[in-house]
Length: 409
Length: 147
Image (cartoon, rainbow over all chains, first blue to last red):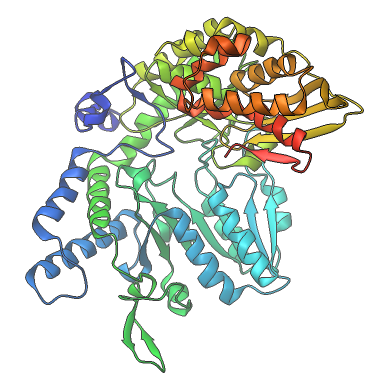
């Protein structure tokens, strides 16, 4: 077990922002599901890229362009190893999870869905794994089905199975819920979906920072993630797609870099994965993404998971002692999220009062309005954990809730 | 920044025991207001006596600021003409957003709301009920959003 212990204080020193005061208090950053902070290694890698290698990629014959291309592609290789993809040809850089899902919806979805087909999602999805399917269903005449969740915030597997049929062409579901922290049994679901011939897309935005990911082991067809939720920069993420699927998918954006030859009569598209990367890519972002992957791998994802599980258990124990507090989302398997409401106090007021104590939490519907509706609350307070959080910060959260009672009664 | 400046006694009191918090049937005008950011949802209803607001009520759920603001509003606007009420909505809006310096004392009890000026994220909470009232008075719009 000692092998799984983290030296949190040493690790915190790599994040300068964690040392800054906020509203006269030390910062307790508990909004990691929204975005994580970035370690020095990531910031330095991006600065080094701009100071030493900056150029456009896949174009120039000059020395800098070769270096920039190498940096960009090294990040892709780092990601390949990180999620155990079979080939870098299966990894498309995008702006993030949302764009990755939209890419699948608009490219694969429009080419493969027709009237009467079904897309099956779950009640717990983030709007980004909801709305793209609503859009493509409206475009193709396919029907969107939603599998229910129970009072713990777990997917109702029997109901899910009942909704699966040969009409189901795609199952799209979240690996770890951003609103409740529920970990879905994705491998099991992939098996069920494949048995009826459906493809499976997994929204991995909240899973990638918390646990090891192995796309070949999961057996899914698409996996989407974002760098900024895993200690990397904003504005970049990736779509992993099985090569045979990606090969058959039509381009979704046209432009430079995604072509081999263009004439007025016809265009020959580029090879994978560049065919899906029109325009100059976010090279510095990719470099930062690569550095974040390297950093997270060096910390060790098993160690991250063990540390966060201890934090979650401590936080849950302390919160359960707060009078009038109700945890929203009590799935047996959870990662990184403590979502709750307090009797008689609106989450927004709690957020403002905690902010006054230097404690950053998210309050609101967490881009999951159907989830809020399911639990009959307009919003929740969400404390979401990162690798640098401490029990002390969670204790401060609990003290902050006492301050809420003091102010609002 | 002092949180007591935001959560003044008047606000806490009106949040805990909102005035005129009920459905009004029948009503002459009504509108729904929605603050998508925090999920505040209010319905404002009113009856008119000619051109004057006779009764104003609200229902829904929201944070302390939005509920207290709605509660204070229902007390304040009764007896005003439609034009006077609209003028007050505009005045309050500009005071709360800091567009007008003005004398908060001239707002009477509503001055308790000016604490939101130090909390930009909360201004929309304080103005939600007032936008909704304006929509109800307008009669054309049935649903407003502060987003």
